[in-house]
Image (cartoon, rainbow, N blue to C red; front, side, top):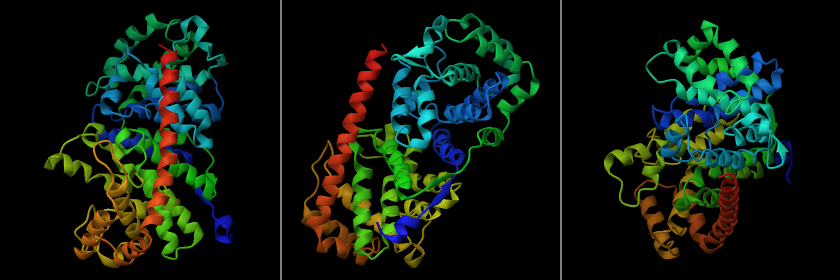
Length: 433
């Protein structure tokens, strides 16, 4: 490890990181917008009312803000809004598997894993032979309260309805002491006013305050892999695309003379480069045929969404630029910002080449990957048209077989991770039916 790699350290706010994921949901559909934030607010309020210390309050608030992170399609997210949700454990188990990859999120991953487990007269205190966190049952209650609130009617106008729906579930779905704490909290007008307030995210951030995370390069790579898996594992079609792009981008960065730490950062950005697609309907991304103009315009929003969602993470500004600008073109005809020439940083130019190269050469369920001749022809046409950096493409052209093997190796490993994820998920969900 070089000196610049050893010395590399950034501080990231866990609240900003969680809200980055949480806010993607609000962009998918107005029907699910603000739901996770309402759950975070209710859960943290119940935890405080029960006398839990500051750290558990913050944990349940963070967990609430991303509790539906594992619902990988709009349809699944909408199903989560049914009070009597069917097959609830698929998305909670999916979120657990994704979030536990990043060690600082291990506690909130465990909370989310059990957040649809009914109290069942106390039987819900254990699952899989292990104790279930109290926070999971708090989150369960908060989630079910939030789904009862109909948009546009005002929370204060629905208090009696919420009471009528929750009371019969005491002891069966919900722990009595948790409901008791909720009723105490619900007796205060501000609680309901906050649920309708436009500044709810600020209240959640205050309640969720954690000490900043000091991350070395390995920690940063772990964040990148979390982003990448969250994006890629939504669909078998693209299950390893970010893995391939990250490996190619890191390889190209080294050949372009970037410092070792910057090369590792390129890998992180590669895993994150399609992050904005979390805000795009999976139904559009998985469409087998040609996208119509409206659908294509939706897809084009993804680098813009990434730019805005990552903006609060100021210590990751450089990575944000590499991610957000990878669809810009040197001739200024790219998107979303229409940058041209030297306004596009080298990292973004490398990412653009790595992304296109990976998309062209990787196998997809509906077509085989292209060979060297065809892929290089398309890349060079993009250079001639003023889209891609000629120097970066020249590096790739000179070592095509080597970089293609780098991609293949990374994607074989990535597919193994995807298979492990889906196998574990299917087995665990089946055991809960």
